[in-house]
Image 1 (tube, rainbow, N blue to C red):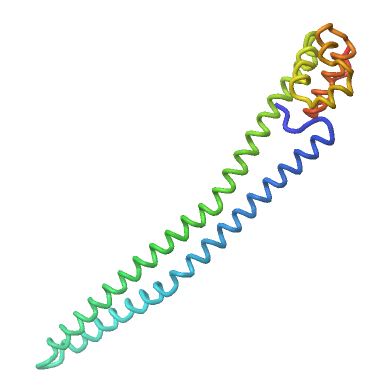
Image 2 (image 1 turned 120 degrees about the vertical axis):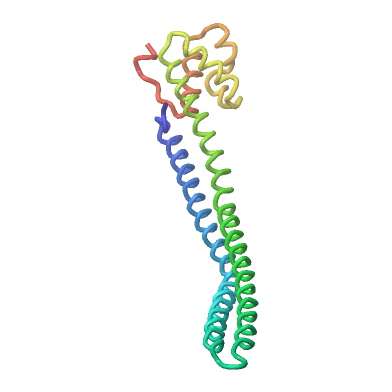
Length: 205
């Protein structure tokens, strides 16, 4: 299956279109990364709070363990510090969950920002290129058969603008109906040129 046209004009348009598609992909990926970084930045305060609360809980437990050995009030002070440490740990868990939720949102938004344009643009481009490749392949096969010119000429009559057809002959449809070899061949060449396909010289004879 052909990837690019034989004729320079059509091939250039295809290359430019493919390059534009590639630029959209690159721009979408960069935009997705920027969105991810921006949203993930919102999680920084929650991360710092979680780290601070965890450090506070650890410090309170360590202090409680040390004071628990003190006579008379050691157990009471240790219990109070342990309860305070549990509260700090709960705050750390809540902040950690908030941080994880924001990071998950950042990942989802970043992927959506990057993938949606890529899937849309690349999907449309791939369909266009596959359709052209199938038509170009069929046109090449038809141009190499005895009756292929008539089929290609008929396609030209169906698809090409009237002013282009009239440049071939004042009555292109009549020439095709009567089997005028020149009109049929010129119409076939018109369809091949529109597809960017170069006729093999031997096929014309």
